[in-house]
Every structure is written in C-alpha cells, then in structure tokens.
Length: 84
Image 1: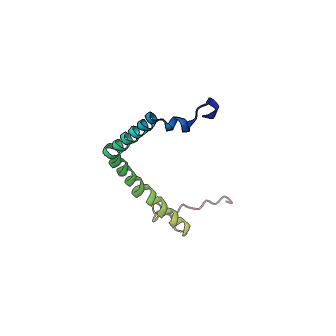
Image 2: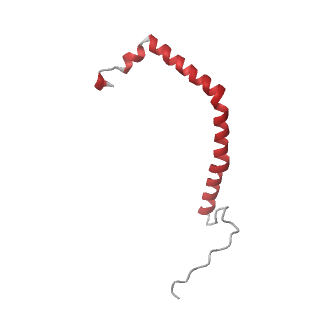
Image 3: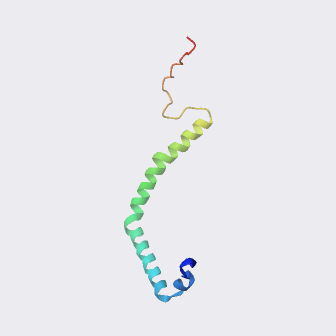
C-alpha cells in the first residue's frame, strides 16, 4: 500500500474504521453462528468420516503391503505373457 501512499496504520487508527471493522466482524460472527456453522459441521463430518478416514486407512494398508479395502477379495488380474 506504500506504493499508493496509503498508511494502513493511519487508516486503521481512525475511530470510524475501527467501528466499521468491529461491526463487520460481529456480522460475520452472527452469520457463521446462526446460519453456516451447522451446515459446515455437517459437510466436515461427511468429508472426514467418508473420505479422509477411508483414505488414511487405505494408505496405512498399502504401506503394510495389503490391498486397499476396495480391492480386498477381488480376483487377481491374469498375468499377460508377452514372450509367447
């Protein structure tokens, strides 16, 4: 902001700007608490329980040399013989 000759410290020291920042923060907090927190938590739980935990569990299985859960119990692919 120095390129434009604007001092952020001077801007944020103004009482009107501080009041506006507090007002906007309170509004954002209100919207989050009353409208967005529950849907966000719901989506987070879906992501965490269905995707992330499954990813971590399968990564651990692969690290141990086991197949991922999706492939466990599936028949082996026939080996192709290119030398025939």
